[in-house]
Image 1 (cartoon, rainbow, N blue to C red):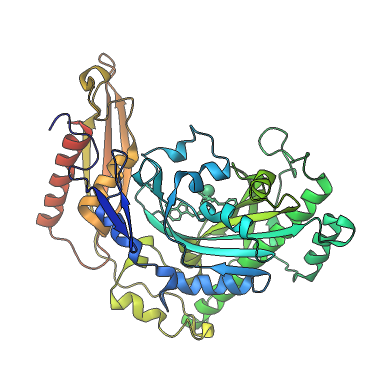
Image 2 (cartoon, rainbow, N blue to C red):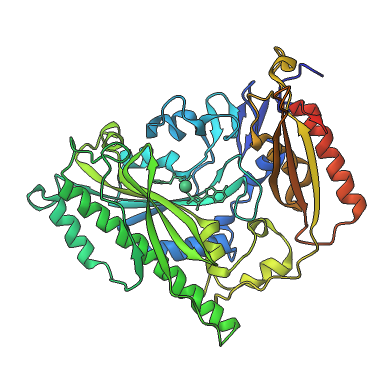
Length: 452
Ligand code: FA5
Ligand code: MG
């Protein structure tokens, strides 16, 4: 047992995802509960809030300018997910602690950007939308889930097809056709940053980049306005005296290997800034590699659950996976008539049950040559994965509450607090104790920690 490689004691030799079979190898780390979700495709399930959110966003970015693609297969190559987008070989996103691999060169896509290169090649319209399920090893809390949905959007202009080759003029003309809004937008950063977010000066001028950025920002601000207008109407339906806070949004400088400059859009919601999307001016290398060097434009990627949480006031991301009628029935009929959209009425919350687990990380020398985690290769996501594997959706969140380094031995001790709270029932003491004992045993067995 001591030398068994993590993570899975029973790696199948191949796995089938949505009708396609793939061989596994020593890099395989996708657990059965995550693989099972690949067949759900919530974004295509009529009257599901993720699907309703997709419909609304598709109406903000309409045909024929934007062509939409909603059925791309979730298994992609490392080339599509990372290399084609300019991710360097040592980028942390590639690590097995962050990504679910089928084998060394095949994975469950971590973002819809995995399909950018193929669509830039195909180039059938001036823009596209891709909605799809994406997969990430991530923390456990009310806004993170190992499977979620993204919508990717892109808009391109072709130098050879605009009057006089004047991209800036063409983009401003298209910007003029977009509606205006009067919400407050904070945008304090300069348009480029020499090191972090340089202008792609070999490929376009500052004026062209500014035109594209202005078009990108207005388009996405209008998306937020649309969502909040609908969210307000939905809330007023439930409570005629509902008073909304004025909508506040802000642009924050960000970094993505496949855009420059890049931004994230944050919305002020329930007392805090919530990140809803990443975006930027596409790296020209993508267009060049796709064989369309005369094109340029912008791209964005939105987390649909985050938008749906704002729209319907859904308090916990686990709810999207519920098959409970008390959840699903609240959205019936909305796909066919968006004016029926109502805010979500939470059903009763069951009591939380907090349990702590404290342990010493395996010291470097004790770990020896085997592959178990030691103090130097501790990845919190491995613990998160064990919790999800054993408890499914019964855990609301997992938080690090204490960290301690022994003054003499230098060993590190961690204490995590696990909040056991089902969305569907009150858990018994016996049930939580049993799950907690299983988690504790799995931490020792799989990660080689020593319980304190
Ligand atoms: C991306 O995934 C980029 N591909 C977005 C992009 C596309 C940038 C095109 C530029 C051009 P990021 O990792 O920040 O970026 O995720 C985008 C959004 O997905 C986040 O803003 C958030 O809304 C959502 N998201 C990220 N992780 C999770 C998670 N674990 N659970 C739910 N939603 C998540
Ligand atoms: Mg982000």
